[in-house]
Length: 97
Image (tube, rainbow, N blue to C red; front, side, top):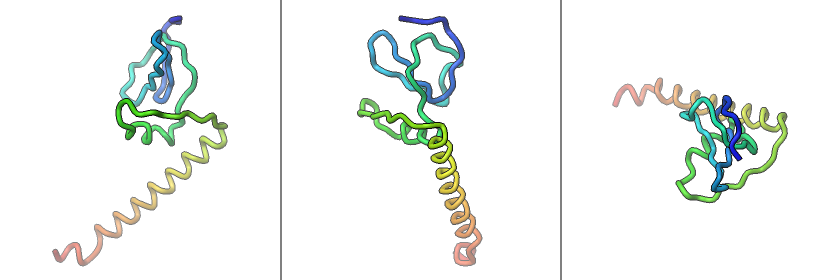
């Protein structure tokens, strides 16, 4: 059944009449009327974005604290990569090439 349209956020999982879930990503419309069954945590949106069209995806329930911990872990990894890139870009060997 459709519901009154209301605001949605990236990661919301909606289920239209055909029963095939739709996950709204970053470019999603600002409102929707399909029933919502959950939300993909922010730390995993990139993983879902890399999944091939038509592939099987499994959703696992998590807690708020685990979602925040996963986001912190992702941010630590991105910070480490940024430091490595900065180190590489300031390397004298790179400038000499």
